[in-house]
Image 1 (cartoon, one colour):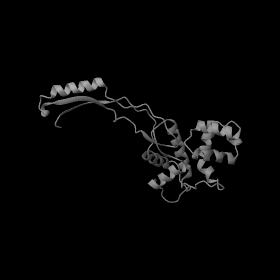
Image 2: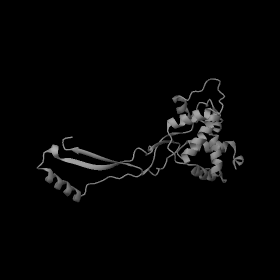
Image 3: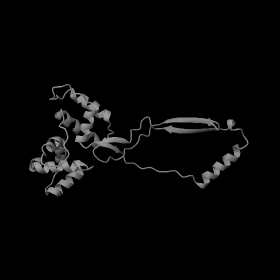
Image 4: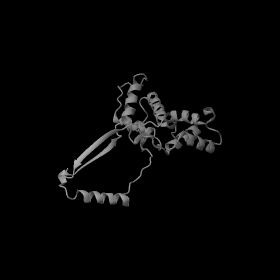
Length: 213
């Protein structure tokens, strides 16, 4: 349980989380081995929700000091939401973070006396405090090579059209458009993110052009 951990141990867990891309499961295994007692993923999650507070109390370390957030409660809730979206493998952007923060500000009071603005400076500070950066989703790619059989077919087509004027030689091909429902392959995250199953919905498009186009 969380109460069995000392303040120093909790800070150590937070610092290890900041040191690299690591999942809650991996952090749980590391902490259990490092501290000689079972530490569940739920405990890890609870500790990370207080990371700003815990690292802010770590005055004796040489770690980089981050500016204290103006709205700690709002930022804590926003970060918890961010972690939930990350675990659900949802693609997250800067615009989504700002939109969510603005929505939360309607119900979460801010201690700051001045009107709070979710500027780009605030966004960069939030991401820096929580080790959030742009990650490329992992996926598989392949390359196509022209076989000898295909090359022979190409040469046969060239011979067939050699007696025609280029303006009278047309090529029509059908292709598919997937991009209208595909998510970006970049997302904000605190660790390496796996790829998602891509949408199979598509539009069929016929393209036609002659040799002079």
